[in-house]
Length: 197
Length: 197
DNA sequence: CATTTCACATACCAACGGTATGTCAAGGTA
DNA sequence: TACCTTGACATACCGTTGGTATGTGAAATG
Image (tube, rainbow over all chains, first blue to last red; front, side, top):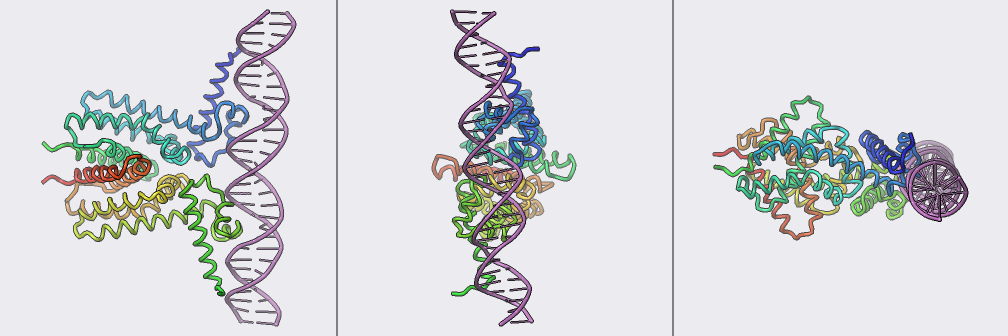
């Protein structure tokens, strides 16, 4: 079982990202040391610094992986709906459910902005999932279903609303009823945007 | 000019909070060292650890100060309106404007949840400003102006929406037009909650 | 005026992120 | 096959950081 160098390289990198993701999600970025990461990954700090520029760069790779997974789920569930309005609602619901995983929250919503800065975090969020929201709102505004002169502010408002709702759901002591209540309230907000016929 | 011990104590503490606030707001929690804080405050680390349990505790004191200022502005501008509906809109607009100060954002919205954890951050946010939002929404739901069966999820949605909007405004390259657009979009969201007559 | 208290200052430490250098097998070349 | 180069790490080390243990001198107390 001899491994080529490219295989070995990618395996080591994937291991570091996987271990980093698990530890960062569990105890937060600041509370996890590089020594623990490389120990659990079975490598040394030399390997980590060979693959990444530092601790923040490893976190960035982890966040990219998380964002892509969430974005893929949002896109998949939204594209399953034929009607643009249903696409918006399905995408929003999919985001809330996808981000409900505890692993996702701390990395994507808590540490992400603090570690990478809000600008970079927002660029990654935009590329992964918020873009779908902006596209859906633009389409609905174009067809006259909703009234949103500039669509960008509304996109940010709704994106922030969902982010906070996800964090609230995670720490809520109550059962799954809160998820339904949140999705209902979100649906109410979206319905309020429709032009009245 | 002899000072009593209580005076001296409070002055040192206020200086530490003021310096910490300025540095944390400028470069972020992680990038500021205790050595720089105590140097600019004209004291030593012994003084800091005599007043606070550590770096995070100093940050908590700073955040409390910021939250109280924002909450006070929101309450003042909201209470100036007689009509409950106008109170809600005025309070939301006041929050967006108050949090637009760059000092406030990094401390209150970026580093706050990451440093203290989302639970503690949310408790402080609730006590300072989100409480006013919850009260306003509860009053409007009670009078039948809006339809919000459980008011808690809607409160979190709107709070998160405003938090994110504030961050977006701060990093936006465009001029004050974005502020107006954001307030307009927020107003549109609120209007959509009103029951149709 | 003796004693206690307390608001700090000083000196120190362990742990952390980061870097410089060494090592050894995979892959190319004659 | 013998040789050399590349690269994917390992090893050893450093400066800085947050945190702590102890010392000190003036204010409060009786």
